[in-house]
Length: 562
Image (cartoon, rainbow, N blue to C red; front, side, top):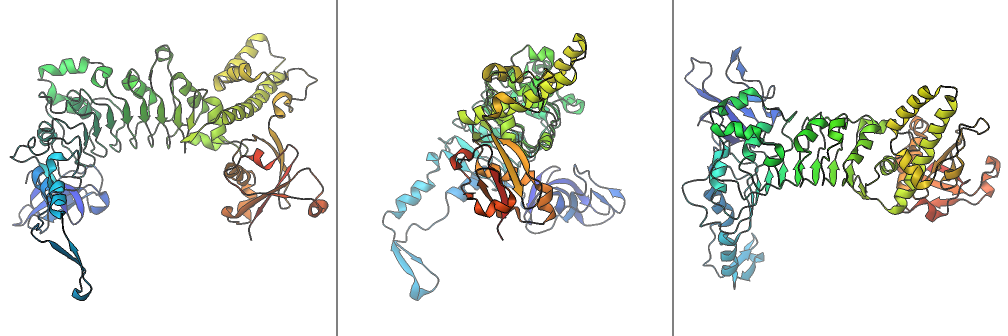
């Protein structure tokens, strides 16, 4: 076995990083293993203060004896294929017996059974081949093109490959292959370009959790001329910069300089889906720089990265980046400002956005929902967090947002009316940089009252207020709270809203939030007369509030099952 070979033992995958005696003067040989699952390890390649090998993750290494039974070092491709798709069954029997106890066995006559088994065994007709977890290490000496003539989808995830050259020997012979999954294999760095079109037919490539660098991906891209989908998640990717130690081995290659001079859109010109989920990318500008000019890119998955802001630089702003991007997933990042949300409007065809679990959501108060804010701010969105947005959703969300932001704006103008024109323009400019969608919403729905007039009550908003439900909320003996709510709000979202509204009060009483019940009555009355007033229960989570005939002035009673 060679260094960096892959093994499987006792249910765990690992990479050989050392072979030899431990301690050095011992007669017993050991393998030093870095485990894919770091919790399987015991140390970082050090024993009795002697460093035997390096680990990429602290304490992910350990030693096992080279004589240990049960170590799998890998088999060839055709052996794995035969093991799964051509099992050694006896086709001579015409009767199959099921059951362990003879007196209770069921006999089935296998008329036509031979034909069924032969059909399953005829791998020549297979179009999809799944060989994940099959311990494949290399192609083997036999040709594959006579065995798999029609395969177009091949799953080689979680095998024992460590060299892309071995994968290339397989794909080169499978002329009809378009989808290849290599997830969870751990490859050593490439030291050469592929020049014989080994991957030219591949359209879909899965390289999740392979720990490849982006430079390695770019080297592969030179032979992936028809790639349409790339899954490159869980690879600890921080940026798309090339490291010197990676490029040094290519400096003598005459094609390398030409390779570096190619624009990214030339290397990925047919790419339509890019999945970079669960990496450590923190700079969205870097993503724009590398992929913004890809004309065919429609879907971009950036879930679970470390992006803090969506920034659009002025020089980039003038160029149409991501001209055909329709879907982006920004769930579970570190985005902490609403300007980043507004900047998504620069991508003219973006209609589907996922934005859950970002820090900015903590700035919403109990009366606001993420869906309402995103709907109002993203003028082209049709789907938010997987939910289809109806015309009614957009209408009510925009009205709610316009009502809220207009009041802030006119209040700001009222409070600063004594400023000179230059100072006031500066205040306006800053406000509109935070709420760039406001002029568009005012042109669409009409302006609110101009609250800069001294005789106007800055706390009132007269035009849009009547389009929202002006409700009072009561929980036990706590103070009544008033809020404006869109009538299209789903009851399940309304319940969450009520829980947030009285969050501290509910937590103080240690109540199970799942037991919430809601009732309302049609007009405000004194507590002593509540029993005399007819109340109506809200009990269908999928209904809009307007279905229950809730009107402005109603009082919502929050209670819990006992």
